[in-house]
Amino acid sequence: MKYYENKRFTKSVGKTGFYTIIICCLLAIGGASWFAVTRYNNIKSSDENSSSSLPDKSYTEENDSYTGSEDEIIIQEEKTDVNNEVSDVPYEEQESTPTSEERGFVLPAQGNIIKGYSDTALQKSETYGDMRLHTGIDIQCEKGTEIKSAGKGTVTAVDESSTLGKFVTIDHGDGITGRYCGLDGITVNTGDSVSAGTVIGTLGSIPCECADKSHLHVEVLKDGKIVSPLEALGMQ
Image (cartoon, rainbow, N blue to C red; front, side, top):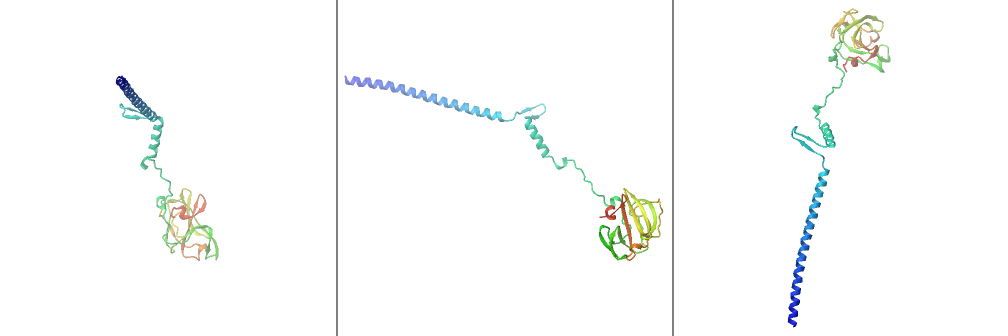
């Protein structure tokens, strides 16, 4: 009797264990399937989010061109402007002051400038023994030296004064007028046309600067106003 009850109990336990194992297996398979489905959905969702963040692009084979979003096109245009080569940018040549050669001016006599132009600083006058302004430049040269026109123009005056001696005035154009003082043996007349280097006379003397070394005194006016001869003629 006891042996029969034990056998029934063992048989009952065996059936229960078998069902338990089957249930555990089913649960394991279900759990694995749920995990796999959940992971797949997460990956798919991540890919969709990444794709939605990318700019809208399309490629057209007909014109072999790339079409991006409006923002991207603007960025590309800005990059194009920034990356322009120097040679692509139009060059506007800056205006420069023409030199004396470019304007056709020459020194009217060869020699050192022993006294410069001054409209503010006083300079010593050996003739008058005082300090005064100097309205031109003095080019040292010997009496009888040929004096030339500094540039092309028209002779507007051949005159003489008690201070400047004999002088020739030439209109060089562009509002520039040259006055060549302390001359002798003048070879031009009012109305004559001259070129740069044309001889207009020889050096004599200038009464208001007779105590200085022998020199030619040159004054230049720009639009009727006394200015620096070297600056006006482009010789600085």
